[in-house]
Length: 170
Length: 290
Image (cartoon, rainbow over all chains, first blue to last red; front, side, top):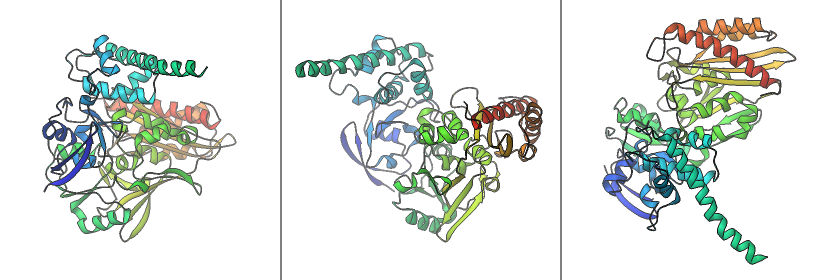
């Protein structure tokens, strides 16, 4: 029954024997003990289980682990891998972008993917991008604020080395 | 929730896929985006013995105009349609529909062809294809056949595709000048199925309608084509009286059921209003506006 898969999870190659019916979210939580990825609704509605597959947000309760064979999966655990919070995490903390925190991993990963594609999103673009992630506490105002603030933060820190190079050149 | 056990196959070529489907017959099921199928497996509404995952076959992901036809491959995801500048500029009804499907994360993975084959009466793409008078190419090991979208749907979640076939290509006549379209959808919230949606496609010819396509979502046992409304528009000038008449005929074609999203009268009225608005918007676009 088992099928061997190799998935690069948060930069590390993981090989495992899995049943084809095993969902990606269960592979992450139960086989790899990466419990930062939450299971909310189990019916593809809520987005709590969002992870990045080759950089794209995917609901990991609606993908089979065998389908991730050969692909790159990023979970919330990767965001602060260096020991310091990712700007999106820092912004969620700063702006109170979470109440109970259950939806937060999915919200943050969707936010990270959005900012990679659109470093300077409008409020509408943030709301649009996050519309597949549901916050049961309805804390949306601060979630949008957090993503916006992370964008500003990331832009500012990206601007520093650029300015330094520019002045070095002149 | 876990699906029932199944055997998993991930063929690398279309030929390999068709060979597998031929051997498996009723036992095999094609997995593309999985955004409808995997929930069905988890709820155990479906429990195929074999899943044939086509995601590794890269040449199934094409969205292009060639030889007077827009061709859409089985692995084109909703997101690709949402971001396609070709669709935005020339296939308005598709460009309108794409961003209204499910939610952004589901659109990253779900496919147009998968949605069409799933044939949910509340699904959006089937309706769009009915309005555009699309052809569906169904391919099996023993050959391929082409079916009109209007002959494809046969009931709720039912189509004329055989278990040994894949929907290998969706073909839409290339958009000509003076054509325009629109897709209007009423949903209670992002990610909900449509309460009602209407797809409109118009081909104008010097102020007169050469052909019109009108599709209806979520108001019948399958996506519906409002053929009497289409016929009433053919050859007519699009004045207010013609638009009103076509909208009334579209509302008559609807066969809604009362549910928590609305009553029969309400849904029928939304069909009427959306057909009017859709025709006006499509006309505007056919004339180069909006």
